[in-house]
Length: 156
Image 1 (cartoon, helix red, strand yellow):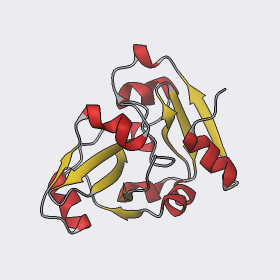
Image 2 (cartoon, rainbow, N blue to C red):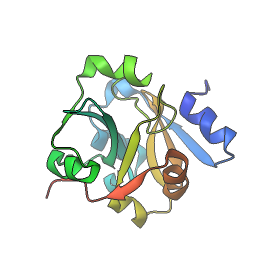
Image 3 (tube, rainbow, N blue to C red):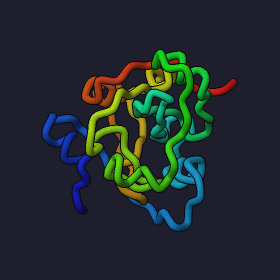
C-alpha cells in the first residue's frame, strides 16, 4: 500500500489507524462508502474545503449523510460569508482530489472544524488521502493533530 501524506503524518505522530480500501469507481457517495465499510453513516466523515469573502480557506469535517450549513460555518469562523471552493481548485490548494480529501496532510495547514458529533465515537472514518481509501482513527487524536475545534456545523 502506498502511503499518503495523511498516513505518513499519522505514522510520524505515532497515531494508530487502520486503512480500508474499496473500488471508488463503484461508489457514488459517502453514504455508499459507509455501506461498503458496513459502518453507520454517522461514523464516516467527509472533508469539505471552503473559502471566505476575505479569501481565507477553512476545512470542515462532517458526517457523510449531512450537509454543511454555510451560515453556521461562517459564524464559527467569524467570517461574514463562506462558500465551497470550486472542485478544480481542490488539488492545487490541498494536494488532494475530490473524493480523496483528508483533513490532515494538506499542502498547507488550514483552520479546521469537526462537527460536534465526532465526540460521540471512539473511532471514525475519514479519507486517507486518496480515492478508494479510508482510515479509521481516534477522532480526539485527529482533532489534536490538526489543531481543530468542534462545533455544530450541519443543517437541521
